[in-house]
Length: 81
Image 1 (tube, helix red, strand yellow):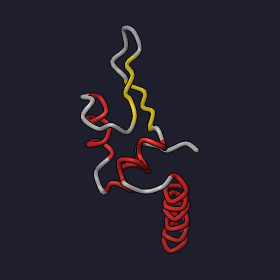
Image 2: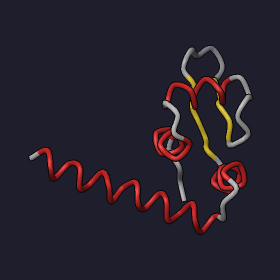
Image 3: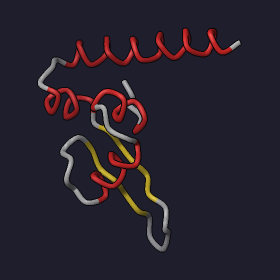
């Protein structure tokens, strides 16, 4: 399972920018931010087991919450039409 910064932000009720900065500063133990040599851009990795542990839920529950996020997004997009 892959968790994006936006998904983690939704689950933790924080902004994606908060998640990115916290990962860069190593202040959030759910993944890593990597800056490649001579680059100003970061790549982010959210580790699902670490996110589940941080949220005090099981990995299976994390998967369910991710699925619910996408179901909600789908309904929201249909309402916009």
